[in-house]
Length: 312
Image 1: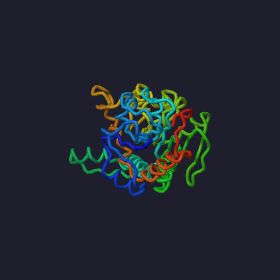
Image 2 (image 1 turned 180 degrees about the horizontal axis):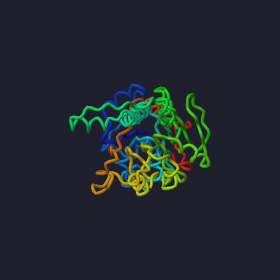
Image 3 (image 1 turned 60 degrees about the vertical axis):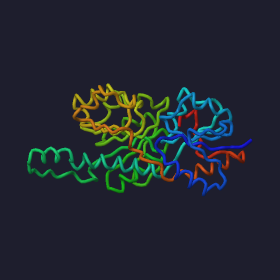
Image 4 (image 1 turned 90 degrees about the horizontal axis):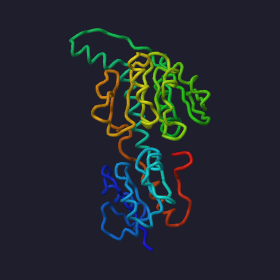
C-alpha cells in the first residue's frame, strides 16, 4: 500500500512545507488538503486545531498518526473527533517556543516599565517621570516548566528578574527557584509580582487557577496566561480584578474561542486580550516531522509522542 502525508492547515505555507519536506525525504508523497487522490493512501496528517473534525478523520481509513500543529496536544487528545488507535505527535518547535518567550517578555516589560501609564500621560500631554523598580526587585513566577515554561523562566532570569518556577514534578534550572507539587503551590504564588501560566489542560490543571489559587497570590500581582483557557475560572479572575486583589491580567487563551463579543474581558480596563496568537508560526518542526514520517514507514517508535494518560 502507498503511504501519503497530508497537510491540513489554513495558516501554514504549503509550498514551503513541500519544499522542505521533500528535501529531507526525497520522493515523499506530500499532499495538501483538499487533495482528490486516494484517501486510503493517507497514513499521517498534520492538522491545525481549527480544522479538526470527525468528518475529516473518518475519510482516511488507514490513518496511523496525527501531528498536532499547536503547542502541546491536549486539545486534540480530548477532542470528541479524535479517532481511536491513532498516535498523536506533539511539537517541540523552537519557533513556537521563541514566540511565546517574546510574548511574555513583551507583556511583563510593558507593565513593569509602565507603558500604559505613559500612553495615558501622552494623551493628556502630561510630563511626569516614574522610576521603575530594579528588575532584581521584581519576582516573576512561571507555572509549568515544560519546554516553553523553562525557556521563559531562563529568559526572564537573563533579564535579571527574580524568577521562580512551579510544576507537577521536580526541575532544576540555573537561576530559577524551582518548586513542585500541589503542596508547594501557595508558597510559589505568595510573593509573585507576575504569575505566568504555561500549563497544559489536564485533569489536574482544569480550573486550577480559581478563587483559592488567586487568593494565594499577593495583592497587586499581574496574571498572564498563555497556556490553556480552561485552567482558569474566569469568574474568579474577574472578581479578583474587580476587588483590586490583582492589578491586571494579560490573556491569550480562553475557555471559549473566539472570545464571545459580549464577554467582560473585552472591555475590562485591567485586562489585555490577544487572540491566541502568542505562539506565532512554526519554525523548526519539519525535521522532526520528517523523522517521524520515516519512522512510521519503517515501523519504528515515533518521537515526541503525546501521552493520553497525561493529557499532553
